[in-house]
Amino acid sequence: MSFDKSSFEVADVFRISGDKFLNSHRLTSEQKKAINDIQECRTQNMGGHTTYCPSCGIIDISYNSCRNRNCPKCGFQKKIKWLYLRKKDVLPITYFHVVFTLPQELNSIFLIASNQKQLYHLFFQSVSKTIELLSNTKKYYSGKTGMIAILHTWGQSLSFHPHIHCILTGGGLDKEKERWIDKKEFLFPVKVMARLFRNIFLKELKKLTLFGKVTLPCSLDIDEEFIPYLNQKEWIVYCKEPFRNPNNLIEYLGRYTHRIAISNHRILEVTNENVSFHYKDYRDGKQKIMLLSHDEFTRRFLQHVVPSGFMRIRYFGILANPFRKNLLRLSRLYLKERLKSLSPLPDSLEKYYIQITGQAFGTCKHCKTGIQIVMEKIPPKARDSPEFKQSP
Image (tube, rainbow, N blue to C red; front, side):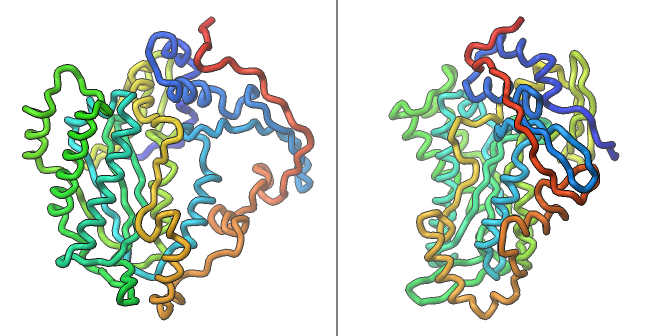
Protein backbone atom coordinates (compact mmCIF):
# COMPACT_ATOMS: atom_id res chain seq x y z
CA MET A 1 0.00 0.00 0.00
CA SER A 2 1.44 3.40 -0.98
CA PHE A 3 0.32 6.89 0.03
CA ASP A 4 0.75 10.22 -1.73
CA LYS A 5 2.39 13.11 0.10
CA SER A 6 -0.16 14.68 2.41
CA SER A 7 -1.07 18.37 2.59
CA PHE A 8 -2.53 17.90 6.08
CA GLU A 9 -0.67 18.49 9.34
CA VAL A 10 -0.93 17.85 13.06
CA ALA A 11 -1.27 21.63 13.33
CA ASP A 12 -4.58 21.45 11.39
CA VAL A 13 -6.07 19.30 14.16
CA PHE A 14 -4.94 21.70 16.86
CA ARG A 15 -6.19 24.76 14.96
CA ILE A 16 -9.64 23.22 14.65
CA SER A 17 -10.04 21.74 18.12
CA GLY A 18 -6.95 22.56 20.17
CA ASP A 19 -8.55 25.37 22.17
CA LYS A 20 -11.55 23.21 22.99
CA PHE A 21 -9.24 20.43 24.20
CA LEU A 22 -7.26 22.90 26.32
CA ASN A 23 -10.40 24.09 28.05
CA SER A 24 -11.89 20.65 28.70
CA HIS A 25 -8.85 18.66 29.89
CA ARG A 26 -6.37 18.93 32.73
CA LEU A 27 -2.96 19.22 31.08
CA THR A 28 0.63 19.89 32.12
CA SER A 29 2.24 23.20 31.17
CA GLU A 30 4.41 21.35 28.60
CA GLN A 31 1.32 19.82 26.95
CA LYS A 32 -0.44 23.19 26.80
CA LYS A 33 2.65 24.78 25.29
CA ALA A 34 2.93 22.00 22.70
CA ILE A 35 -0.64 22.61 21.47
CA ASN A 36 -0.15 26.38 21.27
CA ASP A 37 3.28 26.23 19.64
CA ILE A 38 2.28 23.67 17.01
CA GLN A 39 -0.85 25.68 16.16
CA GLU A 40 1.19 28.78 15.41
CA CYS A 41 4.41 27.31 14.01
CA ARG A 42 5.43 29.06 10.76
CA THR A 43 2.45 31.40 10.80
CA GLN A 44 2.43 35.19 10.91
CA ASN A 45 1.84 35.00 14.67
CA MET A 46 5.43 33.77 15.09
CA GLY A 47 6.92 36.63 13.09
CA GLY A 48 9.54 36.07 10.42
CA HIS A 49 11.36 37.90 7.65
CA THR A 50 11.17 38.81 3.98
CA THR A 51 13.91 37.48 1.74
CA TYR A 52 15.22 38.35 -1.72
CA CYS A 53 16.90 35.89 -4.09
CA PRO A 54 19.53 37.58 -6.27
CA SER A 55 19.45 34.64 -8.68
CA CYS A 56 15.74 34.55 -9.62
CA GLY A 57 14.62 37.89 -8.18
CA ILE A 58 11.75 36.46 -6.12
CA ILE A 59 10.84 38.18 -2.86
CA ASP A 60 9.47 35.73 -0.31
CA ILE A 61 8.10 35.72 3.23
CA SER A 62 9.35 33.13 5.68
CA TYR A 63 7.70 32.73 9.08
CA ASN A 64 9.60 31.53 12.12
CA SER A 65 9.47 28.03 13.55
CA CYS A 66 8.18 27.44 17.06
CA ARG A 67 11.22 25.26 17.91
CA ASN A 68 9.10 23.10 20.18
CA ARG A 69 10.66 19.63 20.23
CA ASN A 70 7.22 18.05 19.85
CA CYS A 71 6.49 19.92 16.60
CA PRO A 72 6.54 17.87 13.37
CA LYS A 73 7.86 20.85 11.37
CA CYS A 74 10.81 21.70 13.61
CA GLY A 75 14.10 20.07 14.49
CA PHE A 76 15.65 19.28 11.09
CA GLN A 77 18.59 21.69 11.44
CA LYS A 78 19.13 20.62 15.05
CA LYS A 79 19.18 17.00 13.88
CA ILE A 80 21.80 17.74 11.19
CA LYS A 81 24.03 19.46 13.75
CA TRP A 82 23.63 16.57 16.20
CA LEU A 83 24.52 14.00 13.53
CA TYR A 84 27.60 15.99 12.52
CA LEU A 85 28.86 16.11 16.10
CA ARG A 86 28.16 12.40 16.64
CA LYS A 87 29.96 11.50 13.42
CA LYS A 88 33.11 12.89 15.01
CA ASP A 89 32.75 10.23 17.73
CA VAL A 90 32.48 7.21 15.41
CA LEU A 91 35.15 4.55 15.85
CA PRO A 92 36.22 1.91 13.28
CA ILE A 93 34.47 -0.92 15.13
CA THR A 94 31.30 -3.00 15.09
CA TYR A 95 28.22 -1.37 16.65
CA PHE A 96 25.08 -3.01 18.00
CA HIS A 97 21.50 -1.71 18.11
CA VAL A 98 19.69 -2.95 21.23
CA VAL A 99 16.10 -2.07 22.19
CA PHE A 100 14.82 -2.28 25.77
CA THR A 101 11.04 -2.29 26.29
CA LEU A 102 8.79 -2.17 29.34
CA PRO A 103 5.70 -4.31 30.01
CA GLN A 104 2.42 -2.52 29.27
CA GLU A 105 1.32 -3.10 32.88
CA LEU A 106 3.64 -0.23 33.86
CA ASN A 107 1.85 2.27 31.59
CA SER A 108 -0.63 3.36 34.26
CA ILE A 109 2.26 4.42 36.53
CA PHE A 110 4.21 6.17 33.76
CA LEU A 111 1.19 8.15 32.61
CA ILE A 112 0.81 9.90 35.97
CA ALA A 113 2.43 13.24 35.14
CA SER A 114 4.17 13.67 38.51
CA ASN A 115 5.93 10.29 38.04
CA GLN A 116 7.39 10.81 34.61
CA LYS A 117 10.75 12.43 35.35
CA GLN A 118 11.55 9.86 38.02
CA LEU A 119 10.43 6.86 35.98
CA TYR A 120 12.03 7.86 32.68
CA HIS A 121 15.25 8.53 34.56
CA LEU A 122 14.94 5.11 36.23
CA PHE A 123 14.43 3.55 32.80
CA PHE A 124 17.67 5.07 31.47
CA GLN A 125 19.66 4.18 34.57
CA SER A 126 18.40 0.58 34.58
CA VAL A 127 19.45 0.14 30.95
CA SER A 128 22.86 1.69 31.61
CA LYS A 129 23.48 -0.42 34.72
CA THR A 130 22.48 -3.60 32.85
CA ILE A 131 25.07 -2.98 30.14
CA GLU A 132 27.73 -1.90 32.65
CA LEU A 133 27.29 -4.98 34.86
CA LEU A 134 27.35 -7.42 31.96
CA SER A 135 30.34 -5.81 30.27
CA ASN A 136 32.31 -6.11 33.54
CA THR A 137 31.52 -9.77 34.22
CA LYS A 138 34.24 -12.33 33.53
CA LYS A 139 32.06 -14.30 31.11
CA TYR A 140 31.08 -11.34 28.92
CA TYR A 141 33.93 -8.93 29.65
CA SER A 142 33.91 -6.11 27.12
CA GLY A 143 35.93 -3.34 28.75
CA LYS A 144 34.38 0.12 29.09
CA THR A 145 31.72 0.30 26.42
CA GLY A 146 30.08 3.38 24.92
CA MET A 147 26.35 3.87 24.46
CA ILE A 148 23.91 6.39 23.01
CA ALA A 149 20.43 5.81 24.43
CA ILE A 150 17.31 7.35 22.84
CA LEU A 151 13.90 7.30 24.52
CA HIS A 152 10.78 6.75 22.41
CA THR A 153 7.36 6.51 24.05
CA TRP A 154 5.10 5.72 21.09
CA GLY A 155 3.93 2.93 18.87
CA GLN A 156 2.84 3.38 15.25
CA SER A 157 -0.78 3.98 16.26
CA LEU A 158 0.24 6.68 18.81
CA SER A 159 -0.26 4.20 21.64
CA PHE A 160 1.89 4.60 24.75
CA HIS A 161 4.83 2.22 24.38
CA PRO A 162 8.00 3.40 26.17
CA HIS A 163 11.21 1.86 24.86
CA ILE A 164 14.87 2.86 24.59
CA HIS A 165 16.96 2.45 21.46
CA CYS A 166 20.63 1.89 22.33
CA ILE A 167 23.57 2.17 19.96
CA LEU A 168 26.35 0.21 21.67
CA THR A 169 30.02 -0.13 20.83
CA GLY A 170 31.01 -3.68 19.95
CA GLY A 171 33.45 -4.10 22.78
CA GLY A 172 35.18 -1.43 24.79
CA LEU A 173 38.24 0.21 26.22
CA ASP A 174 40.54 -1.77 28.51
CA LYS A 175 42.77 0.89 30.07
CA GLU A 176 44.67 -1.54 32.30
CA LYS A 177 45.86 -3.67 29.39
CA GLU A 178 46.03 -0.69 27.01
CA ARG A 179 43.87 -2.21 24.29
CA TRP A 180 40.48 -2.14 22.61
CA ILE A 181 38.41 -5.31 23.11
CA ASP A 182 36.48 -6.30 19.98
CA LYS A 183 33.07 -8.01 20.00
CA LYS A 184 31.95 -8.40 16.40
CA GLU A 185 29.46 -11.26 16.35
CA PHE A 186 27.99 -11.41 19.83
CA LEU A 187 27.23 -8.83 22.50
CA PHE A 188 25.26 -10.36 25.40
CA PRO A 189 22.45 -12.96 25.35
CA VAL A 190 19.13 -11.11 25.07
CA LYS A 191 17.48 -13.22 27.78
CA VAL A 192 20.31 -12.44 30.17
CA MET A 193 19.98 -8.72 29.39
CA ALA A 194 16.19 -8.82 29.78
CA ARG A 195 16.20 -10.58 33.16
CA LEU A 196 18.96 -8.44 34.63
CA PHE A 197 17.24 -5.29 33.37
CA ARG A 198 13.93 -6.47 34.90
CA ASN A 199 15.54 -7.14 38.29
CA ILE A 200 17.32 -3.78 38.41
CA PHE A 201 14.25 -1.80 37.34
CA LEU A 202 11.80 -3.48 39.74
CA LYS A 203 14.18 -3.24 42.70
CA GLU A 204 14.61 0.51 42.17
CA LEU A 205 10.89 1.02 41.46
CA LYS A 206 10.04 -0.52 44.82
CA LYS A 207 12.47 1.86 46.54
CA LEU A 208 10.93 4.88 44.82
CA THR A 209 7.44 3.90 45.96
CA LEU A 210 8.55 3.21 49.54
CA PHE A 211 10.12 6.68 49.76
CA GLY A 212 7.02 8.29 48.25
CA LYS A 213 8.81 9.54 45.12
CA VAL A 214 6.43 7.69 42.78
CA THR A 215 2.63 7.82 43.04
CA LEU A 216 0.72 4.60 42.40
CA PRO A 217 -2.87 4.24 41.15
CA CYS A 218 -5.20 3.53 44.10
CA SER A 219 -6.03 0.03 42.88
CA LEU A 220 -2.38 -1.07 42.68
CA ASP A 221 -0.72 -3.09 45.44
CA ILE A 222 2.94 -3.05 44.49
CA ASP A 223 4.18 -5.48 47.16
CA GLU A 224 1.60 -8.24 47.23
CA GLU A 225 0.61 -8.45 43.57
CA PHE A 226 2.30 -6.08 41.17
CA ILE A 227 6.05 -6.68 41.66
CA PRO A 228 5.71 -10.50 41.97
CA TYR A 229 3.60 -10.58 38.81
CA LEU A 230 6.11 -8.48 36.82
CA ASN A 231 8.97 -10.60 38.17
CA GLN A 232 7.41 -13.69 36.63
CA LYS A 233 6.82 -11.99 33.29
CA GLU A 234 9.45 -12.23 30.54
CA TRP A 235 10.55 -8.71 29.60
CA ILE A 236 11.49 -8.02 26.01
CA VAL A 237 14.95 -6.91 24.91
CA TYR A 238 16.17 -7.50 21.38
CA CYS A 239 19.43 -6.96 19.60
CA LYS A 240 19.40 -6.15 15.88
CA GLU A 241 21.98 -7.15 13.29
CA PRO A 242 25.31 -5.47 14.13
CA PHE A 243 26.73 -2.67 11.98
CA ARG A 244 29.82 -4.01 10.28
CA ASN A 245 30.43 -0.73 8.47
CA PRO A 246 30.58 2.16 10.99
CA ASN A 247 30.17 4.65 8.14
CA ASN A 248 26.49 3.67 7.98
CA LEU A 249 25.92 4.25 11.69
CA ILE A 250 25.17 7.98 11.57
CA GLU A 251 22.68 7.70 8.72
CA TYR A 252 20.94 4.94 10.67
CA LEU A 253 20.89 7.04 13.84
CA GLY A 254 19.05 9.76 11.92
CA ARG A 255 15.97 7.51 11.87
CA TYR A 256 15.72 7.51 15.65
CA THR A 257 16.93 10.88 16.94
CA HIS A 258 14.75 13.99 17.13
CA ARG A 259 11.67 12.03 16.11
CA ILE A 260 8.23 12.72 17.52
CA ALA A 261 5.15 10.55 17.94
CA ILE A 262 3.85 11.16 14.40
CA SER A 263 5.18 13.10 11.42
CA ASN A 264 3.03 15.16 9.09
CA HIS A 265 3.63 12.92 6.07
CA ARG A 266 1.62 10.16 7.79
CA ILE A 267 -1.51 12.33 8.09
CA LEU A 268 -3.92 11.41 5.28
CA GLU A 269 -6.89 13.66 6.02
CA VAL A 270 -8.15 16.09 8.65
CA THR A 271 -11.89 16.89 8.76
CA ASN A 272 -13.76 18.97 11.32
CA GLU A 273 -14.31 15.85 13.45
CA ASN A 274 -11.72 13.18 12.57
CA VAL A 275 -8.09 12.51 11.65
CA SER A 276 -6.92 9.62 9.49
CA PHE A 277 -3.30 8.52 9.24
CA HIS A 278 -1.39 5.48 8.03
CA TYR A 279 0.60 3.20 10.29
CA LYS A 280 2.44 -0.09 10.13
CA ASP A 281 0.85 -2.99 11.98
CA TYR A 282 3.84 -5.01 13.19
CA ARG A 283 1.67 -8.06 13.85
CA ASP A 284 1.37 -8.71 10.11
CA GLY A 285 3.83 -6.13 8.68
CA LYS A 286 1.11 -4.37 6.65
CA GLN A 287 0.40 -0.65 6.21
CA LYS A 288 -3.06 0.26 7.52
CA ILE A 289 -5.20 3.34 8.08
CA MET A 290 -6.43 4.51 11.48
CA LEU A 291 -9.33 6.91 11.99
CA LEU A 292 -9.51 8.85 15.27
CA SER A 293 -11.61 11.71 16.57
CA HIS A 294 -9.77 14.97 17.20
CA ASP A 295 -10.13 14.44 20.93
CA GLU A 296 -8.64 10.94 20.88
CA PHE A 297 -5.87 11.92 18.45
CA THR A 298 -4.87 14.86 20.67
CA ARG A 299 -5.03 12.74 23.82
CA ARG A 300 -2.73 10.13 22.30
CA PHE A 301 -0.34 12.74 20.89
CA LEU A 302 0.03 14.52 24.24
CA GLN A 303 0.93 11.27 26.04
CA HIS A 304 4.35 11.61 24.39
CA VAL A 305 5.13 15.15 25.57
CA VAL A 306 7.84 14.59 28.18
CA PRO A 307 8.54 16.97 31.10
CA SER A 308 10.32 20.23 30.41
CA GLY A 309 14.11 19.95 30.41
CA PHE A 310 14.07 16.16 30.24
CA MET A 311 16.78 14.79 27.94
CA ARG A 312 15.52 12.10 25.56
CA ILE A 313 19.04 11.34 24.28
CA ARG A 314 21.70 10.32 26.79
CA TYR A 315 25.30 9.13 26.64
CA PHE A 316 27.07 6.53 28.75
CA GLY A 317 30.49 4.90 29.16
CA ILE A 318 33.21 6.27 26.92
CA LEU A 319 30.59 8.52 25.27
CA ALA A 320 29.45 10.13 28.54
CA ASN A 321 29.98 13.89 28.34
CA PRO A 322 32.53 14.23 31.18
CA PHE A 323 34.81 11.50 29.75
CA ARG A 324 34.14 11.52 26.00
CA LYS A 325 37.08 13.64 24.86
CA ASN A 326 39.80 11.75 26.72
CA LEU A 327 38.39 8.23 26.37
CA LEU A 328 37.71 8.57 22.65
CA ARG A 329 41.23 9.88 22.12
CA LEU A 330 42.60 6.83 23.96
CA SER A 331 40.31 4.48 21.99
CA ARG A 332 41.51 5.93 18.68
CA LEU A 333 45.09 5.44 19.81
CA TYR A 334 44.47 1.69 20.22
CA LEU A 335 42.50 1.57 16.94
CA LYS A 336 44.80 3.79 14.87
CA GLU A 337 45.49 1.11 12.25
CA ARG A 338 41.77 1.02 11.37
CA LEU A 339 41.01 4.75 11.37
CA LYS A 340 41.66 5.08 7.63
CA SER A 341 38.62 2.85 6.98
CA LEU A 342 36.31 5.66 8.14
CA SER A 343 34.90 8.05 5.57
CA PRO A 344 36.40 11.55 5.89
CA LEU A 345 34.18 14.05 7.68
CA PRO A 346 33.60 17.52 6.16
CA ASP A 347 35.59 20.15 8.06
CA SER A 348 32.54 22.31 8.84
CA LEU A 349 28.87 21.95 9.67
CA GLU A 350 27.98 24.03 6.60
CA LYS A 351 29.77 21.55 4.31
CA TYR A 352 28.13 18.62 6.06
CA TYR A 353 24.73 20.26 5.54
CA ILE A 354 25.45 20.45 1.80
CA GLN A 355 26.59 16.81 1.80
CA ILE A 356 23.34 15.68 3.46
CA THR A 357 20.82 17.95 1.68
CA GLY A 358 22.56 18.66 -1.62
CA GLN A 359 22.32 22.43 -1.14
CA ALA A 360 23.62 25.20 1.10
CA PHE A 361 21.59 26.52 4.00
CA GLY A 362 19.37 29.39 2.89
CA THR A 363 19.12 28.24 -0.74
CA CYS A 364 16.11 29.69 -2.57
CA LYS A 365 13.26 27.17 -2.66
CA HIS A 366 12.15 28.48 -6.09
CA CYS A 367 15.30 28.42 -8.25
CA LYS A 368 17.33 26.06 -6.01
CA THR A 369 20.54 27.97 -6.80
CA GLY A 370 20.53 31.45 -5.23
CA ILE A 371 21.19 32.13 -1.54
CA GLN A 372 18.40 34.23 -0.06
CA ILE A 373 19.18 37.62 1.48
CA VAL A 374 17.15 38.81 4.47
CA MET A 375 15.57 42.20 3.69
CA GLU A 376 13.28 42.92 6.60
CA LYS A 377 12.29 41.26 9.87
CA ILE A 378 8.61 40.76 10.73
CA PRO A 379 7.90 41.02 14.49
CA PRO A 380 5.80 38.28 16.12
CA LYS A 381 2.30 39.00 17.33
CA ALA A 382 1.66 38.99 21.07
CA ARG A 383 0.50 35.56 22.19
CA ASP A 384 -1.62 34.52 25.15
CA SER A 385 0.11 32.40 27.76
CA PRO A 386 -0.82 28.69 27.45
CA GLU A 387 -1.85 28.82 31.10
CA PHE A 388 -4.47 31.53 30.56
CA LYS A 389 -5.54 31.22 26.94
CA GLN A 390 -9.31 31.41 26.73
CA SER A 391 -11.55 30.17 23.96
CA PRO A 392 -13.63 32.81 22.09
